[in-house]
Image 1 (cartoon, rainbow, N blue to C red):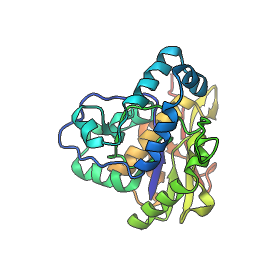
Image 2 (image 1 turned 135 degrees about the horizontal axis):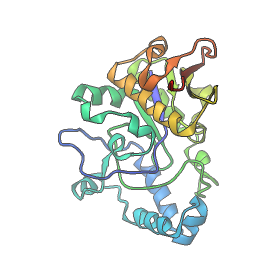
Image 3 (image 1 turned 90 degrees about the vertical axis):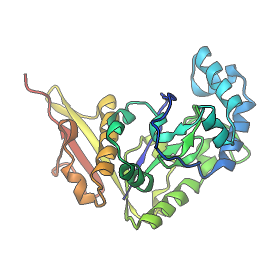
Length: 263
């Protein structure tokens, strides 16, 4: 199976642990075209486009200017880091990377993909440079008025390539709606399995954004560390108190519930 995550706005560009391998993103021509489009925007225009404060708009304008397609040079200057290590949002707090072995990273590289507004589809060991470009933002390019139009079928084709390479028959959707909208399920060579995480609050189970994001990372970490390859094996996921609920689940939607802690 191939698990798919969203990226994170929060980034950690402290030095990566030694010995972790790295690769270069596969669609640099497209990324470069998006960078060039973003560089035409002033900080004020970026603030409007991405709903940013003045300081964050200035920071991201500087990031676009500093970005280079020479990832080897950027890495030497400590401006490039493996995507799985660089993203630092709620989802990525679910990974226990301090415990990862070379075999864990190798499995992740084959079975995990990260959707990206700038890069389309990242492998976890692909280097990224600091950026912020959410998939849902209407950045105009020669290809159209937004990033969904820009990426078109590219992301779906890349997922199909990953499915072929691993002999997988399932894409596990652990991404947000904003990002998974860039995938075209009807054209995938596999079924899509959505994982839904609900926490009990006031006697009812509901999706609570913060906890659901963390659970998506925990599930991805579980897939990697336990070498999960079939949908049925996902049902044994019990991290952080969640359990598979067969009553509310279906073949295409696995629901995991977390009861409230007892007083």
